[in-house]
Image (cartoon, rainbow, N blue to C red; front, side, top):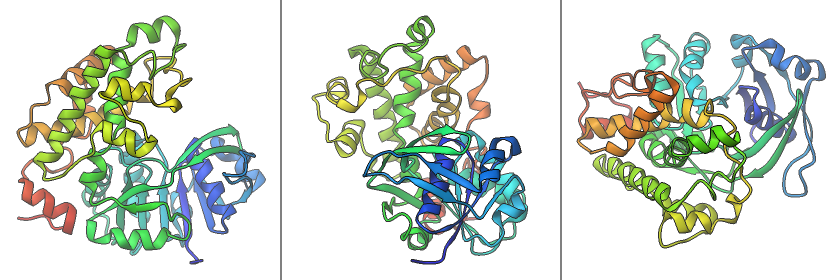
Length: 369
């Protein structure tokens, strides 16, 4: 096993699970959280307990080498930095990390949502970070996990294959090689446009929440989100959004998986249309809806998933009227402007790039003049 030192940034459900699991696998792990109170018990105990989840998932006490709210301390002598935070926090954490990064370090976003690595890289350039670091993003989070207490976490499942891509794509293999002893599940995801445009949460989460606002507010989420919430009409809207996403990818020279293909790949579930396929997925039965509209399916997935896909569509000539309608409804319900808050091509510094220039950038890391 390679002597790789990890830092896990974020002590929420996923961050605690990842830090404990890495420690149980024998790696040196530092845990960072900006709020000291959030990690006080972990620091006192010296680690995190993974509660018993059965034979197929890890459990036991993961001893951490460092638990801190000091970024410089967290990143010291660390080769791989795992960012396990909502994508809406990526910009802030990039700014916080920038002065402390060192040559050769790898930063992986778990997950990047859409254009996460592009946003992170842009902020490092804007803050004049001099370190030669590699930014990468996972297509989805490798764990299904939850926090079971201040110093406890519970892993329910570990995904068998998770696409990952570095920016530029020429560095992806370097990242995979660095983490293979810990995570052989990560596979080459092509490039960060590919991982970002295969973000299925952008299609399922916001629309399914917005089109069931009355039910969510009336029942506080006491219904089956995917089963009761996906009626034939709702499924047709999801299919429109999915076609727009796949068309945006096609405009950029990419072949994105359709929602039906993704359901088959992830769950071995099929159907004549999206309505039938979703209802044929046993794992969706029993999953409750969000209890409130103040939920990450809107305040994270709209600006960090739906907006960047729609913005790429507008820039490269794709009709994204379905996505625009969902974003506008979210703006009204949350009394905000998710276009302004979200990852647009302007914010990412991509607005003047042609398709070939954008492709060259994500593949080779070269910004054509």
